[in-house]
Length: 384
Image (cartoon, rainbow, N blue to C red):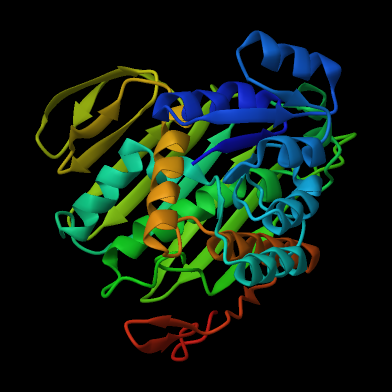
């Protein structure tokens, strides 16, 4: 599988080029309109470098095109690559609207090609091993997932394309968190859904995106509630104007038999406390660059899994590897364009709720097949 890389900016430098090299895949060339980025690509050994994707496609004829550009360009670049007979591995966020997603999906079906989107967090060790433990029933039924991110990241510290977004955090980042909600809760779904679709999708959402600070012109603070089937819920808080110690992505998953604390983005923690249930002191420490999962029950805590290394590029490599396997098998890939479509559909429903003062919005889903049965949002109890 010959790889072409469109977009030679930060995402390619930090994630996609390391992932391609980690897998030993043949990179045939790259394209970027910025001469400085083309010069960088030549210095790091990209064999052929072009100013436009048209030149890249015509000269190198790749089998797969990796699109690592800002999301406003994704729709056109996906259509262009599909028209040239290529499979597409697109950076997230997928596209700018559900209608654009439908265009890309229809074009892929006509071309007989596959599209995957790099919501790669589900490929990280901490989440996959957690999901495997949930699927084995080790902690009982999961019923509540709390998600939070806290950092002080004003717009001027973001890349220009991201800083220009008025709808930013939910659109640009929350697709990762929402995908993980579906991924982790979906471990409890049996039988599993068809390949290419989230394992368990929210059917209703409410959101608030307050603007309490002077000069704030984007959703830097977001509070979201997701309702899922079987009386399960998720609560997500994103705060990019917090002065508290940075937490890149934290989760607490409460299950029938235990709670799980899932931390991503480096963990440096030393805690001395009192275990009131065991009536004795408690000592807890963690120091990892990647992330960890702890099982908490009865006032005690133990490590389920740790990732000592920064996981973003390795997770993308796993995602690309699984994409290649799906192409060879002729099946819908995990993290497909259809999955990404449902993620942005949920994000835009959250924005709709925020525009309506936090009103609960039901997310209507197109019927999909699972083990011969039609899937649709729950028809029993209505969201309250």
